[in-house]
Structures are given as structure tokens and as C-alpha cells.
Amino acid sequence: MPVKVGIPRALLYYYYYPLWKTFFEGLGAQVILSSPSTKGILTDGLKFAVDEICLPVKLAFGHVLDLIGKVDLIFLPRLISIRKNEYICPKFLGLPDMVRRLAGIPPLIDVNINRYKGNNELCQAIKEVGRLFTRNHLKIWLAYRRSLKVHKHYFRLLHLGLMPADALAVLENRVKNEALPDPGKITVALLGHPYNIYDPFINMNIIGRLRAMGANVITAENLQQKIVGSYAARLPKKLFWTLGQHMIGAALHYLERSDVNGMIHIAAFGCGPDSMTGELIERRARAAGMPFLNLTLDEHTGEAGVITRLEAFLDMVRWKMAGTVGVI
Picture 1 (cartoon, rainbow, N blue to C red):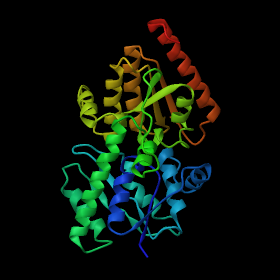
Picture 2: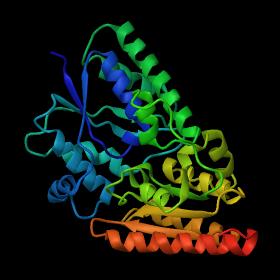
Picture 3: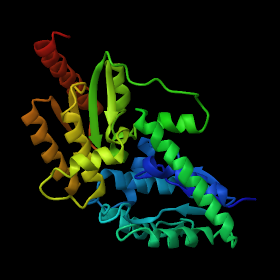
Picture 4: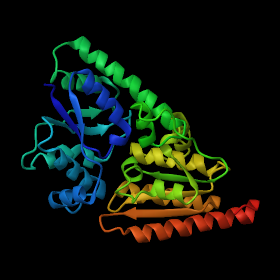
């Protein structure tokens, strides 16, 4: 029987799941995802996570717990840097050590992912993980090449305007295509860390609710990196947090687009980088006269309050559009 590798449906799952899944399957493993986020998964995570960490990491604890008893190994890489000369949140670095103390947890694949100085350490990490399944170096290399191809296809779909769930459905042949944004509707730029904006439980299905209220939703992941990078470079000083820089670059780009009618920033309570990037984005949005909404999430956030604020925000967007271009 193939080795069962568990992948938590949390954190950078929304960036790298197609790559990870293809790589492990190329090595002959069976990939098992944790269940979609629920109140029960979050509650389990809250029991074991320390109070000081942010909501997404608490939820990640719950997803790891959900995999116990279902898999032989859990893939939980020690993420240090995913882009040259930039860093990722330090909580990602410490996550494997925090969850290792959980009772009954299977062995972790906690390889270091560090691209701060380039790809040399990444290549070493690929070999290290591959050797857990096979000693055939060619098989490891071919699995990695195939995973890169799938990863690039996944991001091409995102750049076309699809959300991660829609792009995954296309990759897995569950749908042939997905409807692209309707240019006749209100368009809202939704910005935040991917695990805050794409997990429908943690954000109370904000993308679905905005669509139901008559808005198109676009995100930073719908933009190519060269566009985001060129706008982020306008800041007086480079941010060394990869995800924060990505958000700000996307915000600056969307603020210049006439087809974007409003902007929402989603942050996790207790996230230091979010508090800074959110403030920078809000100041630029206010200066540009764009309707802006900041939503901060934690385990106590109420659904009714979020819905009310979304409705009021879209009313403000429609009011501004009516005053400028005569559209309601």
C-alpha cells in the first residue's frame, strides 16, 4: 500500500497544494487532505495552541489534529523564505515544533524551505523529502519537474481571474472552465493573506457573500508577480515580509485601475505585519478616494457583524459610483 501523506488545509495550502500533491503522488505516495475548516476543527486547535498566536495558526493546529489516525506522515514544512531576499512569518518557522508535542501525531516531514539566498537550499530540501520515498534520483527529479508544471498552470488560472477553489476544480477536471468576472458589476479588490481570504470558514465566506450581493471579487493572486513587484517597489523602503509586500503591491496597482470600485483588507487579530500593511493600504486608499473596509478576524468574530459591514460597504460603493458615473 502507498504511504499516506497528510497535508493540512491551512496557511500556504492555498499557494502550494497543487505542487505538493503532484510531487508526492509522483513519488508514489497517497495524498490525504484534512477536512474543510469547521467550528469543530477550530475548537480542537484552540485547545492546544497558545493564546498569543494568530487565528490562522490556531486553525492550522486543528487541521493537523484532523489528520491524526488517517495518515502515515504529515507534511508540515518549516517555511523560512519563499522568495529571494525576503522572509515569511516566523510563526511558520516554529509551527512544526509547536505541533510536535501533540499526542498521537504521526511523524512530520518538516524540511526547511529557505530561498532567502537562492534555490540551492530548496534543491537540497527536495532531495531530502524525495529520499523518504525512493532512492531513485531520477524519479525524484521527474516528480519535482511535473509538480512545477502543475504549479505554473495553477497560477496561470489564478491570473485569469479565478479563485483558488475554482482553479483547483479546473486542475482536477471537476469543471471544464469557470466564469470570469462580469465587467458590468461592481468590482471589489479583496486583500489579505491567502489563508485569511480563501478559507470560507475563517472569513465567514466573504467571497461568496460579496458575489451574492452583486460584486465581482479580485485578489492579489489574480496579478502576475512582475506587476505586483513593480508597484511594491514604489515604497520608500522594501518590506522583507513576502506576503505583506505582495498585498501592498496589489493594492497600489488596484488603486490606479478605473474598473476597481472598492477595496477590502482582511487581517488576523494579533498579526504584527497585518497591522502595518493594513494601515499603509488604508492611507493610500483614503488618499485615492476609494471606498475602503478593514475587517479584523479572530475566533470571536460574529457572522452578523461581518454581513452588516459588507452591506454597508457595498452601499457606500454604489453611492460613490452614482455620484461619479451615474450608476447605482
